[in-house]
Length: 239
Length: 239
Image (cartoon, rainbow over all chains, first blue to last red; front, side, top):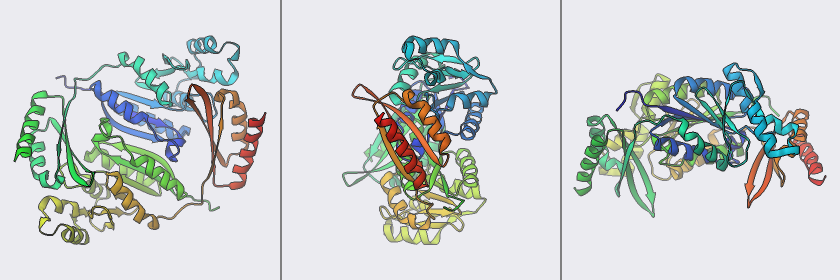
């Protein structure tokens, strides 16, 4: 195992999520997709589409994590300010990106209006993220990947972007379900966690069909340590 | 309308959400419930269950917002560190809360084990938030409300907590759907937003049954301004 493993943060941009109108679907998709690449998402922020909120968040996150992924706010309307906010956050000029403009012109032809031209405005030097669904590209600057908010479009961008990311060592994960209250096994779990610090043991109570239960989720980049913990859990399960 | 309106932040605590194992349901519920109380959720953070992450986030959020609501990490297992993190964040002793302990003893009787006693450990002076579903209470310290992570339990706590919150002036909201690309109305929306700064006009593209469309969501505490914008939108709709 290498010492330094990549980390990530997500920045979800949009008032519609903060007022409960739209249920975000991008967090679940991206955290899972990153996990599968061995990249641990360590933090998510959802912010309003104001310059202050976006700039403050992206500047905090991009310094703390290997990768930052943003969703939302890159369309053609007045409330789409993510690209301009990124330019401000990085202290870069905000200007028409020639390649993005060519893609949009090719897609829209004589319908390439002033409003649509806004979708080609980016921080200077931005690298494009192709959009297989609806042409208007996302982009990245340094370690910040700026993607669409519509889940199907974002997922299309992410699928093509995957190869640009350096994966971490695989994170192995196993689950065991107990049909007892988590407090019944709390002491055992605590010692298991203390004895196996390279694993992450999570305990999640649930109530299903009027039955109390506990899901134990164990994750580790060290397969042997994971197996060791799972064997120990099996012993409780049988006792 | 009063000048100062209440704001809120959510702090969602738990590794299971950051690795994509569990899809969070509390953000959608709470943002909507707060919106209905006239309280604008301005920011959401999802953090790992480590002391550093929780303390850093809660200290940033509680200074910036009228209310902070946390979910997750108040159960009896080793990964439930939210209550202790709150004590550290507020610089308060972490100790058994007599009233919480009495509630738990009453519920569990001679099954009130050492592990369950942990659920009565709170920052000194915490006020309890009753839990109608499973007895173990949440609590609040100053403006930070600490609730369970299991959605049904959290919702039970929030229902009883509502009366403790000071609502804001109502936020009125209207939606209009156009079956055209948002760029077609982008210029009109921009002027409408500029002319009506006390409203918040959001434009959300969608793709449904192979048809492109745009939902316009208008929100305002000023009903007249909202009506004015909706009338103007109607004119586009008819043109």
